[in-house]
Length: 428
Ligand SMILES: [Zn+2]
Image (cartoon, rainbow, N blue to C red; front, side):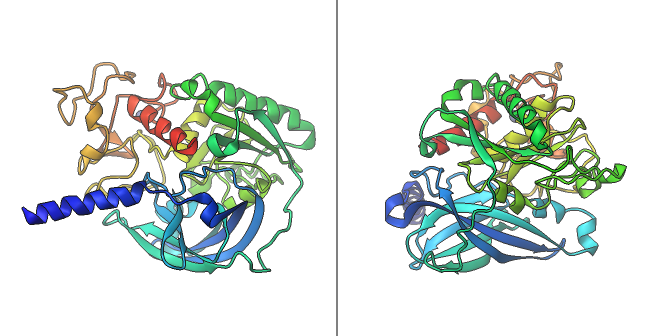
């Protein structure tokens, strides 16, 4: 009994500690610090190196929610005072981590560059990066570096002079979701098309629940970054274009996987823009895209289903949603460890279903739930087997959802709730 009480007290203490957010003005200036990191390794080994520090524009993220409470992501970065107090944190995924699950990574070590922004610290801090260990799902420290904000070597250089414009303004970036669209593969003559493409994506986004209930919670920004040539690289068709973010199809040798290997380049393009979420619009007609949590979303402007692909990929990159499909050919094998609960809010292995959508199920729902007669049903909730690229051992909330197919009516109730929680986090 005593052990139980002690455990309860410990749990309450940890919840209290979790809920307490540091005071922004105590620790940070109004500016933004970009931290460039190189992730290197192969399928069995990874290491992180510091690549550079850059003082950018004003911090546009929340000044209230500084400690990430979602516990999403394959990685977590944490800024600590020299006394070890956490004053900023954020979970994220990387393209590098996806690559580590491919066949190429077994034989060939590679390095991927990516960047992360934090509020500019007033005093010396320690940056730590944790990886989620696949066997346990628990974070483990893999990188630690001291940052002295007064260091003369922190770059103040302005990386570019791309025009940053506003497509939709609803208020102070600190209390809004700032979605920033980046132009990729648009020449100077095509910038009007970029603005029209971004407007089309924006209008579509706000027709969809739950975004249609939260339009006033968003600011939309555009970075009018100019490419020398129009389009993007399609390596397996021997198409190569000189573009500002150097995006390409055929990522991990998959026909439709459109990404930009060097995410740092995209953050450099956005150096003067306010953002909570980066989305790269690639001026192309070929079907494809990718979305990586707190990293970037990226997709083609004019392919079939372009708007649907955009909201799907943005579901990954902004809200940490997992893929609810399992029947398509992907480059990943055994992506999820079914012995642990995945962190994505819309997938479960039933190891810890209480942490997912159990509270949303109608009473009497059988778990798992047999398939319903209507394969396009996106409302009737259950626990349906198949999701996360795996047909067995992993479950999704509805028969169909925008995180499963482009033809779905929209997001399922579980995805909608997760998106609304994320919007709320940035708006405090
Ligand atoms: Zn869903």
